[in-house]
Length: 181
Image (cartoon, rainbow, N blue to C red):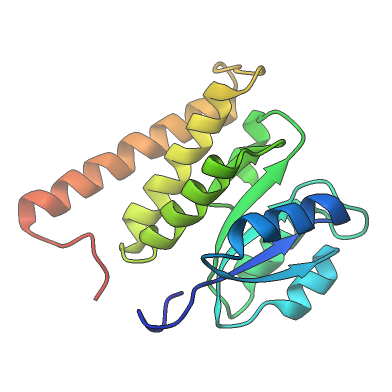
C-alpha cells in the first residue's frame, strides 16, 4: 500500500454524486493526492499501485459499492477501502470487504481521521489489519440506528473479533511483531 514515506499518499474517491465527490476532494486535497471517479467501473480503471485509500460510495448505479469493493480486493492492488453510505450500518456490512464504514453526511474531521487511520494500518500485519477493520465495522454498527446485535452475522463477527484478539495477544507473548517488515 505504501511504497515510500516521501511520496504524497493517494486517495481515490468513487461516488456518483458530483457534489459530494468534489467536496470530499476539496477537504482532502491540501494533504493528499486525490483522484475521483463517478462510478465503480471508472474507479476500477483509475485504481493503481499508488492508490493508498479508496473512499467508496455504497449505493451507485451500475457496479454497486459492494461489488466494487469485492473487485478491488480481487485485483492486484491493495488499498484500504472505506465505504461511505447514506444508509445506516446494518449487519450486512460484515459481508463487505472494507476496512471502515462511514455514514453520510461525513464531517471533515471524521473523513480526515478515517483516511489517516487507514493509512496507519498499512504498517501492521494482516491479522491486526483484519482485527481493526472488523472493530471499525462494529463501531459503525453501534453508532447506527439499526444496532441489532442479535443476528447471526453480528454474533459471528464477535467470535471472529475474539479469535483475532487472542491471536494478537499470543503474538505479543511470543514476541511476534504486529508491524509488517
